[in-house]
Length: 192
Ligand SMILES: Nc1ncnc2c1ncn2[C@@H]1O[C@H](COP(=O)(O)OP(=O)(O)O)[C@@H](O)[C@H]1O
Ligand SMILES: O=C(O)C1=C[C@@H](OP(=O)(O)O)[C@@H](O)[C@H](O)C1
Ligand SMILES: [Mg+2]
Image (cartoon, rainbow, N blue to C red; front, side):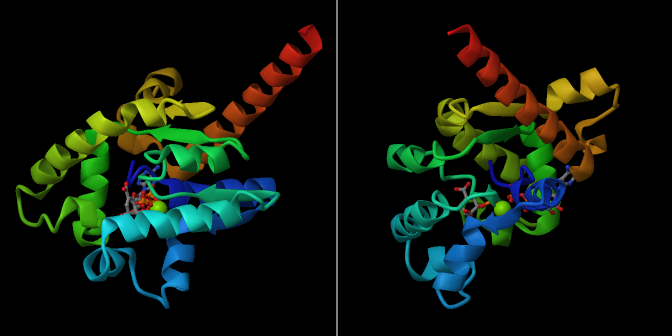
């Protein structure tokens, strides 16, 4: 989902892996002459944005040794999964109330699907929109190879709240999950 930390944590993960960091939103903005995602939605429309997103994803899917932060909506188009499957897909499963706080703090104008919620009720408004979006997308996010569930991490690591899970802690957990995934894959292949 938007605000889950893909761009922020992706950079840290790339550093840890000594991989390149690529962000599909940034590549779309560059290809559109520096137009922001919000301007893109306004001046063109979501369908054209999704087409641009697939075009960028096709190119990204053939890069090696890279961490790619995608936009939160990339999971919706079945065609995109053809390209997502070229790599290891990781879902950052963040509780929606934490997402709402983050996107409002970042300014919901940066995420056109949320509209420009401001003022006291901004978090409530953003949460309502995020709930509706998530309800439709949850089955797609569940297709990821690996899920990092923040709620489960809070309990397992003994934190008080999801907001205690810093980007660095999440990057470390992603590394752990990636190692677990490939170990299981290797053992599975050996057993076969
Ligand atoms: N683990 C985290 N803890 C607290 N804030 C975070 C965390 N990860 C990201 N953020 C903040 O949440 C907002 C959205 O992060 P971003 O990386 O842009 O998410 P995405 O690319 O998934 O939309 C940013 O303001 C970022 O600083
Ligand atoms: O969830 C979505 O549909 C979107 C997420 C955004 O990226 P982030 O997930 O990096 O915010 C960006 O691609 C666009 O606003 C659409
Ligand atoms: Mg992002």
